[in-house]
Each structure stands twice: as C-alpha cells, then as structure tokens.
Amino acid sequence: MIKHHPKLELLESYVAGELPASVSVMIAAHLEMCPKCKQQITELTVKVADNCFDKDAFAFDESEIQFDFDAFIDDVTEDTSIDELVEPEPQEVKVADTPYCLPQVLCNLERSSWMNLGKLSRSRIELEDGDLRMSLLHIDAEGSVPNHTHNGFEITLLVDGSFEDEMGTYSRGDFIWLDGKNTHTPFTKEGCLCLTVSSDSLHFTQGLSKLLNPIGKFIY
Figure 1 (spheres, rainbow, N blue to C red):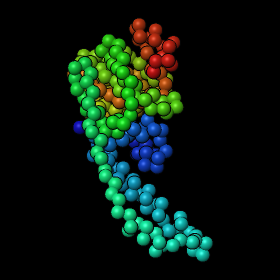
Figure 2: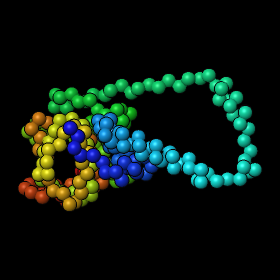
Figure 3: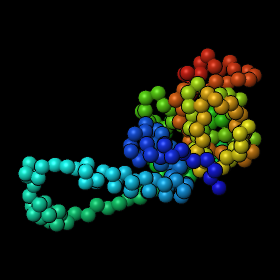
Figure 4: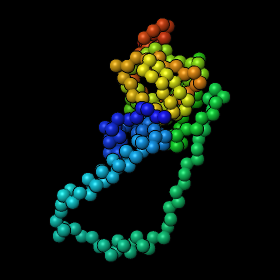
C-alpha cells in the first residue's frame, strides 16, 4: 500500500504546469501507480478548467470579434483524418540479474549506461533541467546508502521493491521528499529500484563516506 504521496500544493502546481520537467516526470510516474493521487489530479484538472472558462474571465466586446463560425464548422467536418493513439511499449531494465518494468513516462527518455559502486548502481536520465539531476538508482539486496543528509532537496519514487530507514519502511509507489532537515541510512533487504531527482549533492555524515563530500557537487 502506498503511504507517501505528493503534497496537495505540489499536485496543484503539476496541473498548472508550473513544475520543473524532472519533478513533473516524477509525479507522472507516481500517478501511474497511485489511484488516489490520480483521482485528485482529475478533480484538480476539472477545477482549473472550470476557472478557465469562467464567464467573467472572458469579458469582451463582441463587435471587435471577426469569426466565421460556419466556415470553422465546415473545416472541422471536412477533415476525415484520424489520429491513431499508440500506447508506448512497456520498457524493462535488468539490474543485478533482476528485471524491472519502468513507468511509461520514462519510455521516451534517454538513459545513460549503468554505473556501479558496490551494491549501488545508477543510470542518469538524460533530461536537461537546470541544476536538477534525475536518475534511476538500484540498491542490491542487503545493500544500503551510507548515512547522509541533503545539501538541497531529494525526491525518491520507489519503482519496485522496498527499503527502510530511520523514518519508516517504503514500498512500491511511495513518493518521498527529503531535504537538509532529514538524515537517514536507506537499507533494503530484497533490493529496490528508485527514480530520484536531486537539486544538489548528498552530504555524508559518518565513516569513510565523508571523504566524498569535497567532490559531492561533481557526482550527485
């Protein structure tokens, strides 16, 4: 069961088209897994549409409009072309001998080759979005990310599997937003695949991993 969802304000910004591309992709991927948020998006979209077509918002002088309605209808009815809707083919990735089905919203986005470091593997999503970085992150079974906090914000969508940290246990579809107020050590028993967006590097807080902090800006 999905326990962690985008906040209402974030969904409202998504409907309004106000979010960075990578954050919009994250929410779209979550919507593929979450009926609750998908219903909220439907309701918010209807509300925005109603506001857009509010009569008061379209006050105008009819004498200033030159529009041939009959010609418009003729153009529409004479067009017999049919646009065929083609559903994107499901895409599967295989990491550590485990197959995973990706969210459809990722199907047309390029991905880099997997980079491996111990039980962690990362594939960058090739999406130009300013300072934001989007990646697929895989953690092998019995693997973890060293204890860290965040220099910016980090959004994690759990695509498959599960993991846990000091704040709880997360399962497929969970949408988690963390920042510098959060410190945690994600660990997975069975392995997991996550979609992540980061605005800045992680800041490691314990052990030898702290040595990565000086170059963190270059590897996030």
